[in-house]
Image 1 (cartoon, rainbow, N blue to C red):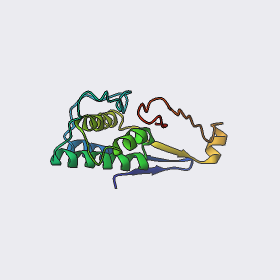
Image 2 (image 1 turned 45 degrees about the vertical axis):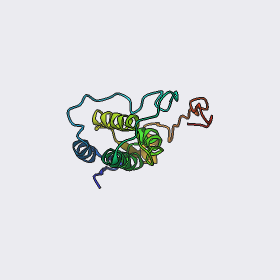
Image 3 (image 1 turned 135 degrees about the vertical axis):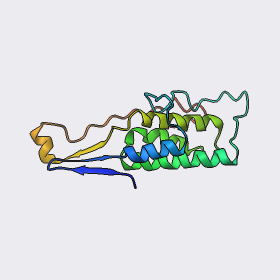
Length: 152
């Protein structure tokens, strides 16, 4: 499945650098400059002035493969791309060229951050290092969905 798991006395580390590299090659995204963030801010804004350009059959298949692999990565060991992956999954039924560009951006972000991993530490290690057990931040953005005013 492409998941590297390393375990020692105090922690377990999970990463997917080989799987990401394989996908980048499969989607022909090697050698392109990387991105520092997985998603643009106003990706979902559409002014309604013109119809979005739908992808052809081959482009749609490529988009679905990209998003499916992103969902696997985000659910396995890269929660930093979970929002972008699930946001792109909304476009699976009728993908557009802008959705494909957004999927490529997430892959270019992953290309520049292949060293990142998911680290699980034992409670004993956390107590020894006086680390908090869990820190979480939430930002519910009710105003970003201009059409339905739902949380994004």
